[in-house]
Length: 185
Image (cartoon, rainbow, N blue to C red; front, side, top):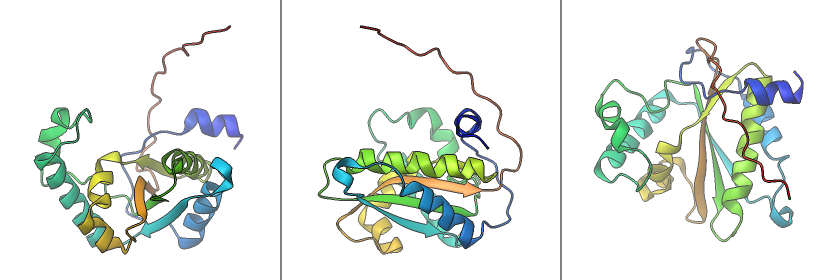
């Protein structure tokens, strides 16, 4: 797949087949992620791969409860409250893997650098015929003490990009894009 094709065809996938993604493939996605640029080449990221369905469900339930109890300001949670209250709604859409990209706490550009790594990972997933989706609704719970404890994250790691990965159950439809707002000077 050509790079521009991956850029144009990558979609947020929210429907997955149950078959697992093997460790070698997930490692290749992480290898693509670490090729991202980072400020002063600090590479301030770490990766946690969760492939255990009961743990993914536990995180989903806890993150949904936290969002309903303490919605982050401006996150649009109010519009999806009914979905979050649905006990059958799985925050990770039953994807077989979650790759959490975290930044080190003392890095002023860590969030940006991790976002760049996340984009590389999602493009590599698309190139491999996999679907992915950045599930921002999980970030706050994963950054809280119970989330960090469950995943064995240190106090210095800040969860940035919870990205689910798996084999799409069906192709994700194209999403219309607005024209670029450009100011030429």
